[in-house]
Length: 415
Image 1: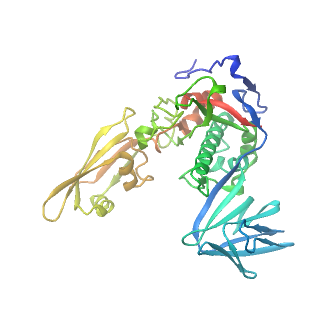
Image 2: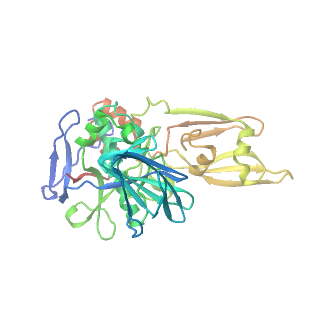
Image 3: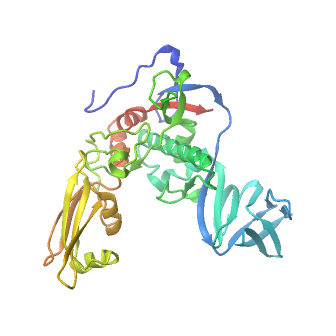
């Protein structure tokens, strides 16, 4: 047994556990099957852009519909290019002729694909009138969405077991966000950027990625809850809940818990685990030097004067900074200070510059400030570089996921 491998769960027979054997490079996974498994793949609503002045779509036999009764449909025969704008809760066709719709407006094509500007879009595009301009949402099959996430968030060139683990985590995250968005009556489920998961669309798809997505089809990480919200072991008596399967680039040796990083616990993602596999990451260790002038500029909005001290007040068990105390001296010679949490401090300096909250700081008002740190990202959930190396070392997808999400189960929720 390799270090820190927690082993495969042995599930009682009455759970209805089944082994799903995946052909090709991805190994067999022990997966729990839910009762009355769905044969329908859910759709996901991906926010592509918001508050833009114009929306241009083009393709063959396009169809635009709205649920509103006024001028509810627009159809084309043959090749067409449409241009829309938005204002006052309405979507306005401005070219090749004019027509006004009570938004939102859904555009699709019988071919299943068409152009949004110069980008190929699958299934349908929904134009929502925003306070300023249009917001554009792509509605598509969640499995096809994942095809466009693989190379946005990691790489299809990695070991297939590592890719399978990350596809399952990405599917779990997307399904969780989708359920929450619908509960909150939001008009989209996920953003196409690092705010959620980077979605490259059709341009990011490739055969290797699609093969792994297909071979893990419908498989998510889930937790089981009873009516009090407590985790249970017998799924038939509880509600199956997909976990918000956070992941990040490089943990630097240990992952962290959501409650430590953001102050909010998450079902199925609790505590942190040691990671001995991300040491080869180019961002395992890093350092950055910032001048006093730059630090003063970054903190100028506080209106407290020049920065004279930066101190890590406390740390979480993982070693990441919990609180930072920043000292200021104003023009009248008055000293004051502000205490920030680690994530706030990192945001002020810039997440691409201060790659994680796993850092030490040195310097003074007469010298440059030097930050020496480890890892890249928030540190919660799966360490992507660790997963990559685990796959290369011979771990299978289930072992990788069990290590980083020890409180979750692998469940197949649609065929």
